[in-house]
Length: 386
Image (cartoon, rainbow, N blue to C red; front, side, top):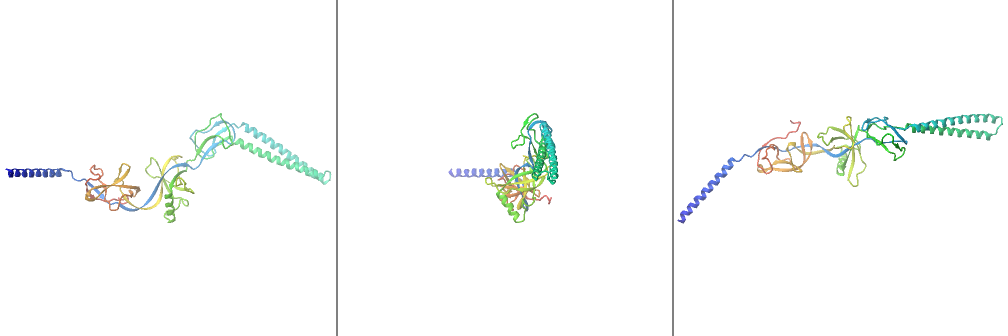
């Protein structure tokens, strides 16, 4: 009886095993095949290294317009925000008091000239009388001194006239430079105090073309640029107009080119950075002082690995590249990226030349880290090879 029960148990166990094996086989046959992907090793190239910095645009020239003389504002001759040329009339100060001062100074000049003429005649007569010994030499010297004083008074009167005329001219406040004018800071009818350091600002003018771009570079970058200059791989921006490119916050291409024209003479003791400046044409007046942007400078040559930009994926705050590892399993590798070069993305860190990078098939949702794939060999080509 026991032996019979044992046989029945073994038969049941064998049946269960066969059923399980059949189920697994059926599932394996019904499972979807591993997704196909195209893989290729990164291209190794020597590429130009470009450094990028954030900065802002700044006017080449900017002037706070102040009055040189005091008085009431008679009229304003510009529209807020318009473009003006050097010499354009901006404000008119009541000129009448200064016109009166010019008339008074002219009268003083006429009086002084009359005294000079009288003194010259007195000296001439005195010299004739002195020859006849009618007057003494002392009288002659006294008349010469009176004549010299009259000449000095004439020079002083003429200087006062020029000063009065200058003050009259300054009642017309004109643009000292060409550029875009700000809004008026004072209206018609107001009394202003001019000719002093604390004189009221009437408006402000900034030039727009060309325009500067100001940025700060780290001490490490500054040392690297000096090393490149010493090795003759890159000229110093102090000695040569090295090329620079700039783009705005909403731009992706580096279409605006200019050149470096200043590097500061010291690094900031607190920031550890050094100030640099580039200059750019702004014929269309699109760039505005105070606007932020990014500047790109040549930073030497670099041995880099290149992959298609489409092979770069985002994983939260980092960038990754999918590679196919042993047993055809997908592995995610965090990478540090550089600029585009030859139509491909420069990978600065994270990849090796032997990595098999997934360059096609990334759109398949089953191609993800840890999944099995069916890799097919492909090739990464530069823009020049296509």
